[in-house]
Picture 1 (cartoon, helix red, strand yellow):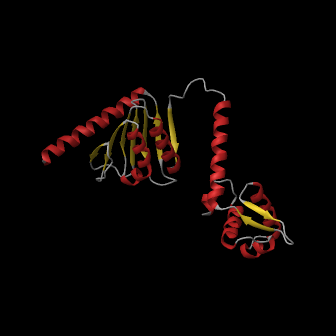
Picture 2: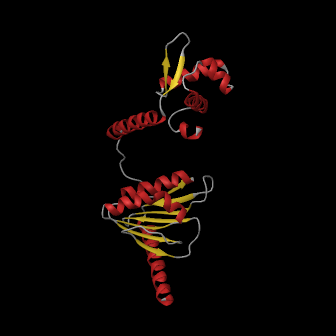
Picture 3: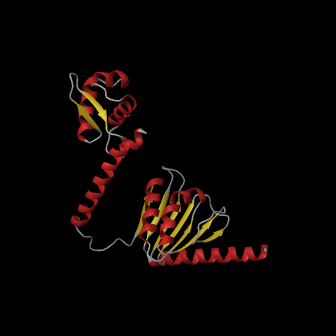
Length: 231
């Protein structure tokens, strides 16, 4: 839980104190220090920071107490602020002269999943993807959204599952391998293993895109031929 709260701009100590307030309700700095084992000086510094960051309110009584802002309200406030900031940044960020068309390495499971989600969300016509069922569960909402917008979605996976509107092929595949082609203009390929051992290559190089398109087409043909023999 602490780790998740750090994504909302809280330090680990602030997160610990916020959780403590959420469990116990309004508390004085002394009570927080006693409950958490954090020094009183650090507790008061962190409590003031929580108030400043919109995670807690100060209750002015005989003894100053601090009460947490409910987690849904706190998160919603932060998300709304980030959305407003996003609009300003997009409007004011200097424009890039030309998009990089080289070979870009994307490392780390979270970063790769973000890249997959962004590529799918930005697709305009078609999506071809070969991926494990475990990773599929993570990106399924984005594929459903693409289908609802009328995009062609073709999937190669190792185990049967249902996704209405998608063309699905089942085949044995490398457990961690990911291959994604979007609009015949972008490709992502590599492995998703864990946070420290996941690496993918992203590119808009047409020769690489064409290479992977042919590879996927051949794999699909082989699956179809195999299925006919089995029938």
